[in-house]
Length: 251
Length: 291
Image (cartoon, one colour):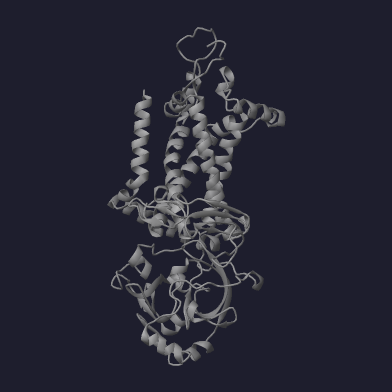
């Protein structure tokens, strides 16, 4: 039989030790890392298993737009090259599509504007918890990748950005499942106007079934790779490298 | 499970005969699945609460509808004032909370202006990424425990026998009678102590049938991929930001339940109550005039 003293002492030590500060130490152990990574994989696999390749994120009506689509992260890149491009209205901007492709592309904004476009009013969910609804117009990523012709070894698409964010350039990566989703696009328009610099001009990624930090802004180069282990710190994105955010941001 | 059920039937009356002939002294109150679930759930809900408060700290404002961000109207927010901290609800209620919420000193004495203080969050220092790892990992454990408890409770008839209110218990007069008994701290004795009273049934039922399923479903609704896979989710809760608000309100409900639950355990006799949730055996309190 457990005495009250033992019980109170035991609960106090366990509860106090585990919940105050102890958790910080537990989280650093290899077992905790393995548990976290295993459950991240489980979340990814379940979310993929319950989705079809083409299950769409909900599209809203114009009446449901956020009055203001807030800017987050970088709102005005300071990199010299970007500032020069922006000053000329991105006339000299070229989107590069390369890496594991048959035909690397280099496209001006006017070429991109003439390509097939899609407009979708979707909800942007930030990892922090807020949401904003915006109407995006852009070129479906799948079409660009088909034009370039992915080589069989290509497994991931990496987006290299113009903005210096903290330690290094912002970048993000997604797999082909999301890259060829019909709502995944490089957007050049927001709410019927040209995409503002605060929201990622001239091109930003929309990958509607994932959280905001995957939606790279100021995209300069789209690279098809077999692995992102040699890019940045190897975790597949700026926030993944610098702050240990999960690579899969569907939840 | 079968072994357990057999135990109850054999163990319902104490083998030791008692002073009052025919009256039972001990009662096998909690089945093994209930006990396992109870303690695992207690630990997991603590982790979910504290890691959830860390996630809340990343954006300490809640909204109704599909969208909601800094320029939109929040129905509740927690944050710093120029010198203290406050909780603002709607446009009327403004509660000063400096020192605890919105502005507090961390364990090194450094002043911080996040919503919930270091001692209430996992991890104790601000990290949205780490809070999410804890929360989204243990969410699986919470879901598994919930399925285990509800499944076991259906099979061993715990839900139907112990938690389902009887028709006669659902009259206002009966409920009011129980409320008065609770307020006077008059706890059931004898045969009545072997069953949950109606307030227990409603509060335990509210936790296992409403608050926990609700908090799991609203949690899923905050996931953009789950919303694409199951579009009924955001519709069910009136939008993603409404789901986030309901998730928060379910948390408030679970915390309130836990506070009252612990208070009742202390008042009703903590040793007997805790022992029954550890070993299953509950000593039946006798009426005072017999004791």
